[in-house]
Amino acid sequence: MTLATVFASLLLANAAWASGNPSRGQELAGQVCQSCHGIDGNTVLSPEYPRLAGQHRDYLVVALKAYRSGARNNAIMASFAQNLSDQDIEDLAAWFSRQDGLVELEVD
Image 1 (cartoon, rainbow, N blue to C red):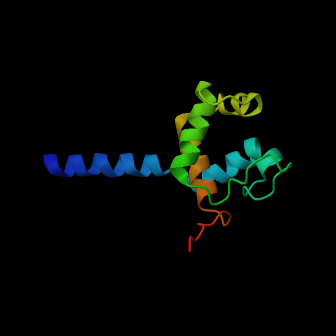
Image 2 (image 1 turned 90 degrees about the vertical axis):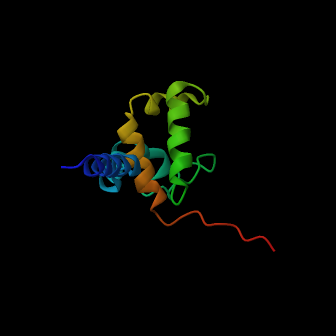
């Protein structure tokens, strides 16, 4: 195996990990997020809770990591996020970002 092949394999493996597993994200959403955001991110318990469906993957990753670290202050989200691994966060972001929900606003 050449060095280039090894390097390419490592890059692909890292890219697959970074993109998250939406199937596992759906499973986690049913365990962790469903009560407030709905399993698909569209059925919120209260108008104050954001719809997660269709949200940008990168935004969800940053937000969940910020709740976990305490950089974003919300007692409810912090208690859920502190139990999530980096992979859990990637998986949840992959699931919610692939759901129909938020749309891009058009500016005239």
